[in-house]
Image 1 (cartoon, rainbow, N blue to C red):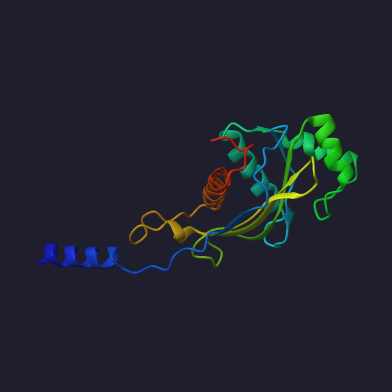
Image 2 (image 1 turned 135 degrees about the vertical axis):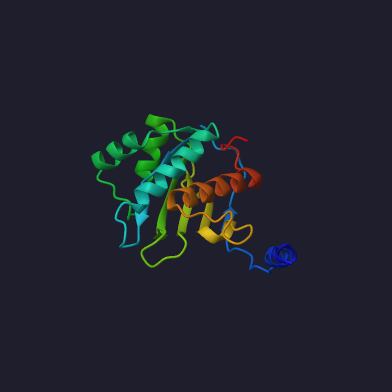
Length: 195
């Protein structure tokens, strides 16, 4: 009797209609090859108050995502030194002089920047971690946007059944979100991001 009840209960839970996760979007403006094929990831602007280093954390995770796919990426320390030396801050628009300097002196073809809109870790009033990040890629050759992306993820977006599959770590959630972004950019035809 108990076995029958468990089978009915588990099969009922497995067939629950769950709303489709809002994952954001990726919009690609140009599909021309990015030359030279090297990426610089600028520190992200942090628009939240509960974690003053959220922008840096997301940019670092995105950096590791690009590196893991084999893309040549400028080291974050080099980018930071350059920005401090040129008095450039992450809340400003990227000046053409910085793009030109990155292209000529560091052989960078694509600059990636963004904003962290929401970064809620597990606990502290939040049942599941949440992230919302806006990212854009800018060509150093033309100064125009190559892509924009908006990532929004919650830990329960990966739920399989009951609590199985739920992501409870904000770092793991950010890793998964950036991996999905890189795959979408590859599918969209961004030539600098190798498959």
